[in-house]
Length: 132
Image 1 (cartoon, helix red, strand yellow):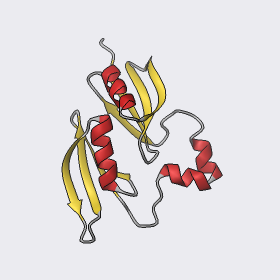
Image 2 (cartoon, helix red, strand yellow):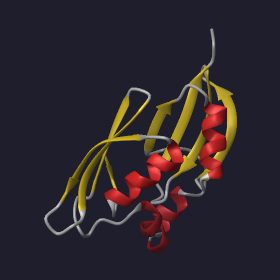
Image 3 (tube, one colour):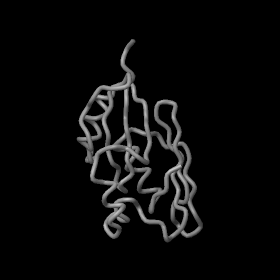
Image 4 (spheres, one colour):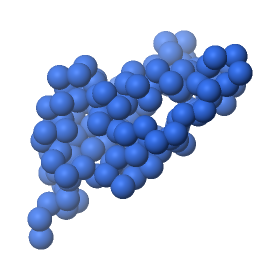
C-alpha cells in the first residue's frame, strides 16, 4: 500500500503513465477518493491517504533537508519493484507520458530495469527478467 495526498489523482496518473489497471475505487462521503486498487502484470498495489496531515515525498523534501538528501540519487530505497513483459516499451511509454526517469535501462541481477518517480515522488523500479 502506498500513501498519496490524492489517491484518485494518483491512480489516474499511474494508469495513464505506468499502464496499471484500476480494479476498485472507494469514494468518501465528502467526495474525495479514499482508496484505489490497481493491478499490473499480476501484481497488486493499493493507494490511500492515511490522514489530512500526510505529505507526499516530493513536498516533504521541500521542507526537510534529510528527506531532500534521500532524493540525491536515482536508487529506489523505499518504493515498488514491478515486473513488466517489455521494459523497453514500458520506459518509452512512461517517458512520453511525463514520468520522471531516474535511470536509463541497465542490466544486473538477472534483469533489465529502469527507475522512475511518480507525480508524488514515490519511486518505482520496472524490470524484465533476462532470458536464461
